[in-house]
Structure formats: structure tokens, C-alpha cells
Length: 435
Image (cartoon, rainbow, N blue to C red; front, side, top):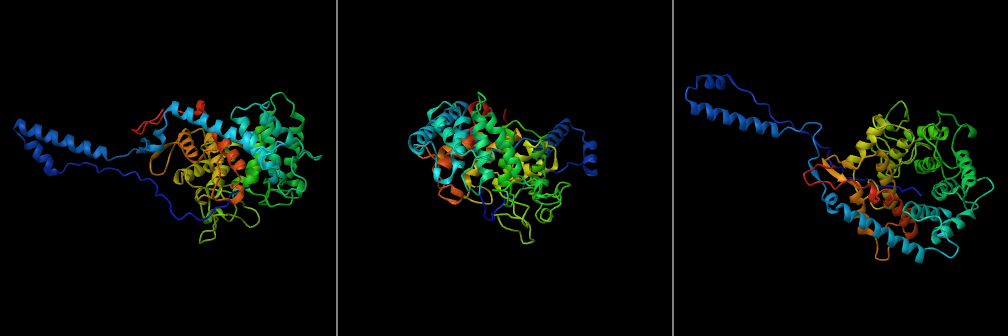
């Protein structure tokens, strides 16, 4: 279910901070000033000095200066308009899902197993639909039919047991308001922790597979499955002190293009841009390809997934890993493409984009060109533009099942849950300041 990128050729240049010329007075100027005897000459000289000094100061850009401009997309939606747009999009999507996309057995895209139904149902719950809502209740009942004796929630014979169980955990955790799913969740948690690569598989921390999760016990671990594992555990209230999250953090750190004490893989030094790729295991895998030096290219969906996972695992904003990832997303801030992938996996990208920036706690992202982005409003506007009249979303680039409207609409609902009206900051001002 993880998007695989293609090489992105264009990179926006980093912002430079030019420093204006420093004014100095020559000996001739000092002699001229001392020699002035007429008041008018003194006045002219003082006025000229003021003008020159003001011009020089105006060319300086202090390091803490505000952004040079604001993306027009950030100012298009006023607070009331954004809230109304959010409600309209959600209502249209819910009508489509309940009236047209849900099968009689409660499933959404049941041919693909329980994963799509879990994603959609979690999106409905996170946008205000209660467990008693007819569409939600039918979907929950459908998902319960996939509960296995080992505690997992997956289709019989599935190669995606970790992924399917993790998204089911996220769904049932949202619906567990009265405690009816507590035991189910306890057993599912034990199952996904058992699927994690660690000492129980004879793997020690020096192994690049350590701490990761894959589609199944024998599958190579990857960052996509591992970030879903961390999401599932967080939905159960687990935090940085949880042993499984600690192990997962080691794997996540090794999937970053950044050499640190946490990452001694051979790949980081070859492309030290701070972004993330698909897997450090199995010889290293990036679906964005490799650099001429053999480095693994970073790409958008995995970089946001990696950043979010680190934040959930307790890595702070001053940590070099978080700083480097944050700088990467500033360089490649984009809502029209999944950086490094183009349109492939675009809606998966929107979901992790919103979740990561919400976890980062930043309402405004200032990109490498000094342009301020109210990312929630910009995301709302972009998703509104892409919604069909029938209320669903679908990707023309159908890779990774994004030609399935139910799955894509589920991704969008999850993204929209981080753009709810109460989360919107005051509109960005055209002067470049914000509140």
C-alpha cells in the first residue's frame, strides 16, 4: 500500500539571505564634513546620509525575518469559508460512501480485503460520525468477521496481515467509546507486536531489519508498514516509553538520509538530504531510484511518514533528525504532486502530509523560497478542487490501488480530520505575517 516514486528532476533553490552593503565614510568624506561651514551644506549632508543608511538597512534580511511572501492559496479561504468548505466536502463524501460505495455486507471495496473498509471507517469516525451511524455500524460488523484466533484482523491467507491489522486497530480504537472493543484491541496489539522484527525472530539491533514491520512475518520490513504500526500503537495510547515503539524508532531512523549515531547504514552518506526512503533492509530500497553515487533517493510520502513516526516516538523538534526532515519538506513543499513520485500515491501522500504537519505543531510552513503556507487551508482548497461532483476522490494514476474511489476517499477523510474548523489558525495576511 506504499507509494513508489519516480525521480524528481527539478529542485527549488534554497532561500538566500543577502546582506546589504555596509556604509563607510572615506577620509575625503570626513574632511568634507569637517570643512562644511554653511548650514545648508550640513542639512544636505545629513539628508544624504539618512537616505543611504536607510537603503543599506533595507537590503539586509535578518535570520529571524518573516517570510518574504505568502502563497495566494493561503489567503483564498477566510475562516468562515474554510469551515464551510470542510463541512461541504465531508457531507458529500459521506453521502457517496453510504449510498453508493458500501456493499450490503458493510464493506468498502471488499475485493481488496478488510484494509480499505478499515481506512474508510476510521475516516468517517474521525470526522464526527458515531459508531451508531448506520454505515459505520455495518462496516464495524464486517470488520469483526476478520478477527483471527491469533488476534490479527486480516483476510485468510493475506500477505498484508500487519497492514490490515494495524488499520483495523486504528478503526476500532476510534469506535471504542464504550469499551466494547477493548479485548479485541488487546489481542490485536499483541499480534502486531509479534509481527515486528526483533529478538523473537533471532534479529538483534545491529541488523537493519530490527524494529521494522513488513506486510507479513517473513516479509522485508519497510517504512510504510512500520509507520502504520506506530500509528496503531499510538491510537491505543502507547507512547515513547513503549518497547515496540522504541524498536520501531531505530528502524525509522535508519530509513533517513542522514548520518547520525542512530543511523550507520551505508546509504545515508551518499545522499544526505534529510528525507526518507522505503526501506533500509534487503540491501536498501527507494522507489524513487538511486543517485549516481548509489544513494537512495528520498521522496514525499515516506519523508512525511518518517517525520510523523519520529514525533510520535518522542523525538523532539531540536533533534537533528527532525530538523533535517523539516528542512526537506520546506525544500519540497508541494500539494499538486507527491514529491519524487508525481501523481503516483498522491492521496496516500495527502494523508501522511496532514498527519505529520499536525504532529509537528506548525500551522504555517515557510518554504525554502521564503513563502508562507497555511497548509491546512491550502490542503482544503486542493482537495475541494479534486473532489468529483458525486462526492468521491480518485487518482488517474491508479498505482497502489488509488484507482479505487473508496480507498482514496478514505485517505482524504483521514487528511481532512486534521483540517477541522477548530484547528484552523487565523487567515494568513498578505503582508507575510500571521497569527
